[in-house]
Amino acid sequence: MPKIKIPPVLRASVGGEREVDAPGENVRDVLHGLVSAHPATETQLFGGDGELNRYVNVYLNDEDVRVLDGLDTAVGASDVLVILPAMAGG
Amino acid sequence: MSARQLQNRPCGGRYTDIVQSIGNTPIVELKRLSPKPGVRLWAKLESHNPTGSVKDRVARALIEDAEEKGAIAPGQVILEPTSGNTGISLGMICKLRGYPLKVVMPDNVTPERTQLLEMWGAEIVYSEGSKGSNGAVELALEMAAADSRYYMPYQYGNEANPLAHYNGTAVEILEELDQDVTAFVAGLGTGGTLMGNARRMKEVLGDAVKIVAAEPMQGEPVQGLRSLDDGFIPPIIDLALLDRKIFVTNSDAIVWTRKLLDEEGIFAGVSSGAIARVAARIAGELDEGNVVFIVADDGWKYLSSGIYTRPLEEIENLESTLWW
Image (cartoon, rainbow over all chains, first blue to last red; front, side, top):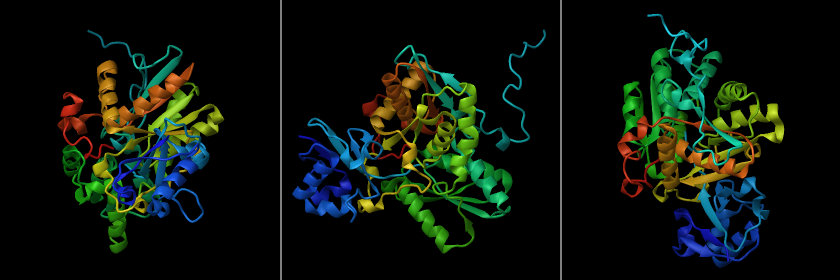
């Protein structure tokens, strides 16, 4: 089952866990699995249109899914989704 | 004894002042780090700019854009959020052109950044390090809104930033490599380097060139946001121009910063290690072509951290330092 790495800012919404398992064959299904188990994550992860919140970056292993196939990006059983806040540099 | 015959002229160019000497940086092949014989890996040494970083190009563009628009005149206070390099570059230019400079910078950067900013006469306002650069942006925007004395170039939202690369870095790379670029890799901070180079290279080469962003996976102590809504995406970023976007952990970035030094003799900063790691990975996925990556700054600003000499496990504050 795919794993999801939870950033510090979301941990209070998942009972303090740093990593959770969630079923699914694409990013949308895996994140919805997380939301089903931990409903408090929904408004942080998704906007009202069902798309990813603008300031949330989700990575399939280490690649941003927004430049892959977005929420439709395929996820394998051994993959890890990493959720991170969008942060700048410069 | 007569002087050695010159092989190239101009040698490094002749300029009327140090600001005019920004850019025209060397590009160097890294044969030892290239994973395949048919793939050539090239480092564009932006560390050769006057203050040692790619941000000299951006700072010059921001200031000259404001001057051309009549938005600033000597004596005008410039305010800018920065994780260091842009502030240092602005420090040099503002000192020469008579603009007092105030920068907002996270308090968890390496101490050399403070020393360099002070050396150039900049005033520093520290933001909360746990919020990373997002915290510096937030505080600077509040300060600018509250006090009309400030002119904020705002590198995150000013098209002069990517244009510095569109009209400079990208043109130089295409010229040096005879317009044969298979992939271009740079760090994602403001997005200026990636956007400017991507636009020029896609215009010239179309989809034949792949644009790849390397970004930091900040350590957990630097993710001290209240909610994911506190995330920040610079307005100048257009994700549609990126073909890949890959994060690199601080540990991997430092391992590759050391590889650049040990295997190729390139003394670079931590973001350049991360960028090199991604460039080598992309090179490994190709059979042939030129992969170019940006060495964003040199290593002088990181010496106190011990990353060039100590074992990785002995580096203090690895995850709580803002490296880029």
